[in-house]
Length: 368
Image 1 (cartoon, rainbow, N blue to C red):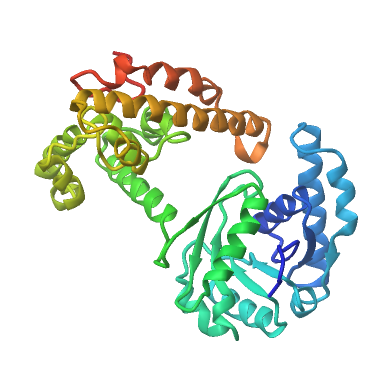
Image 2 (tube, rainbow, N blue to C red):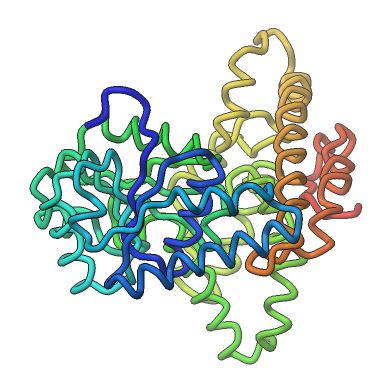
């Protein structure tokens, strides 16, 4: 394992994900080794990376000299050749169990420092027995397009050493990513969430509630409009946890247990913790800010003081999301609607105290 910061990455698999990870590594100054299933496929994969970078140069998204950096990329003649003594190997072969288990075993035989498998669904503990050093093995779930999407799920195995996790976090931050530590489970976190939504969308479609296009329009123009800036828990705190509990009661009566309110929500509502309008809620930011407010202030003043601090943090997040959205607009693989570019001003308007701290709940996007 590398003693200092990792500056060399080997990528095994040059499909959609491998090409995106390779571009991100080059853009951030890493030395790069690459390999695919054969020498011809490796050559074709390098050509795909070049073509991808050329499109992004034309769009003004990456510097022109990034193409010149491709001459420094070292193609491997085999998996063992590309991975031998590499500081970090990112395996990005197709999401096929038979291919994955064989590939990670081949990589492990080359004795690299750290092996990170880019899997979106396979539990890491199932793959770990196929490597010789499970302490230096873990999952990294990039999202397509890998060169632009910031989030990466980092999934340790049962034996993964803490220092390995930290080194991988450091590499991902150097790539401009937002690493999030997630426990190993089928589908991990992001896929479990987005597929839960997709299943409910399918049910709505099957019930004839709306067409597929209409369902897409509702998602992208309502709660989906908020998601580039706020996660579900922050949105729930803004909307009012009592409101969410009431809606879930109604849904549970009609659709049964799949909409039963979770104990975590019921417990907060039972104590009068409704989110921003009363002070505390699910958001760690909200709880942290409230803990610094003198208790002699009334609940409404506590919420207002907390909200002022929260708005400062939130506006920073909005600016970051605005910059990312602007950068992605011209990228074919990551089309962003013009409505997202309006997000900063719209959300800021709805974060004014008059909107946040009315007695009734106000959701972001509610023009009232």
